[in-house]
Length: 388
Image 1 (cartoon, rainbow, N blue to C red):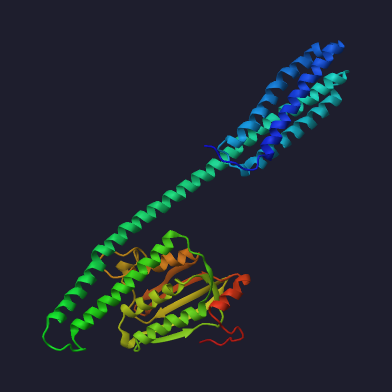
Image 2 (tube, rainbow, N blue to C red; image 1 turned 90 degrees about the vertical axis):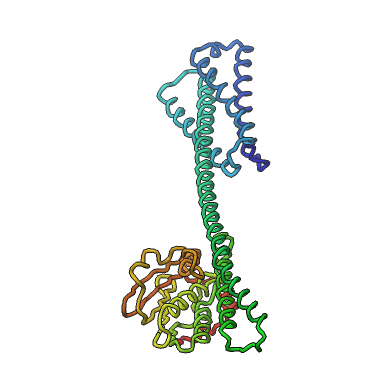
């Protein structure tokens, strides 16, 4: 495959080097013949000449072939480095040998120098080309493997999204349509406390939540999101406030220092929102207490979410973060794991039992250079240090 136009300086230099060495190899013996020098017929000169010409032709051909090869242009410098290093190294080695094996002829020495330089440059060019081809081929194979893995994940996601659309979304839509039709055909005045209205509201809420989670998961799989500094303190405040508004009977204690900024995006809040909702939905709200604590450890923020519920059944532990089967609304803790992984963080179940459940999410802190944009997005007075 032709690699396209690029900077041809190095291939041109290789080509020119081959031309110069070949020209030197032609002009010198012709001059010696014209002057009647006997050195041109000596076996040392002839043997060197026979091996010099193929080496020069290889360099000339290589200079022409390289721009049209499938080796990326960025490896031209590597090939040139191998060629120059081998040429210089082989020449120095032969100059050292000349000290112990004198020839008594200037032309034999000149031919020896030309032979060492030509052969060294040629061998270096071949080795550099093979090395660069192997390196670029390995990178291409790795990219192909990553591309294939990405396509496999996308196919799995499409299959799962199709299942959600066919079952969960369709079922919710049918419930909403059925109850709305029942209300429309009823001759009685609509009572705000009518159970049908409550069912429509619940199914609509579930449908909205599923749609948001599907969208979030699609964004993660696409992998084109740009991470940016996000104020973790404000994010946790917002998510806790949502739970308090929707579930006023749940006691939530938030303890987080002000001004913690991590690497994330607009989906970061969904991580903690899902964990909080998971605790509320699987425990009795009347006596439920949830504690959210944050500390910074080794350039990362560790968020612990604890509840005093009944714990997670043992049968669910092995598949806790797996993609849920069709039939339950939402993507559960699966979306939490996928999002946290996309932030180069971790999420784990620290403890569960009759005394409650603890999840811990670790997210890398934002780099210092990014502190300005983070503060602009979520203003926090960094002079504040009290816990919330």
